[in-house]
Amino acid sequence: MLMWTKDERRNNRREIVSSSYVASVPYLGRVNIHPHIHSPGEWFLTCQSLRIEKLPLGSVSPEEAEQLAEAELVKHLEGHIAWCRSALAELRGESDTAAP
Image (cartoon, rainbow, N blue to C red):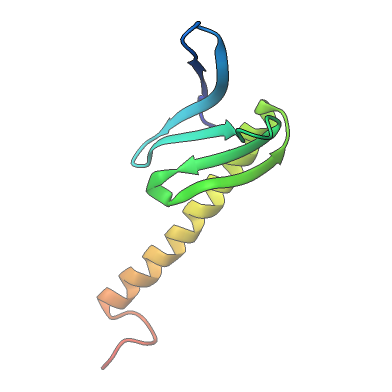
């Protein structure tokens, strides 16, 4: 479970114009969830290191968006783990497709 911090953007009059939530993940860096600029109830996930850019999370509460974002991060990381294991097996010559 990540620790999410609210990040608010303000205009010149110091009024809040948008809110997003940011978390830091070891080795991945900054992850954030943010509302769609034209649909305030629609949330998106962004994580540059996993190449996730504006992944839709749905029209949910911020708390639900956090849970959905964490589930999506797990899914993406599990995909990367499988890819890394396959690549390591290939490099070590342990793969079925390795040349003799």
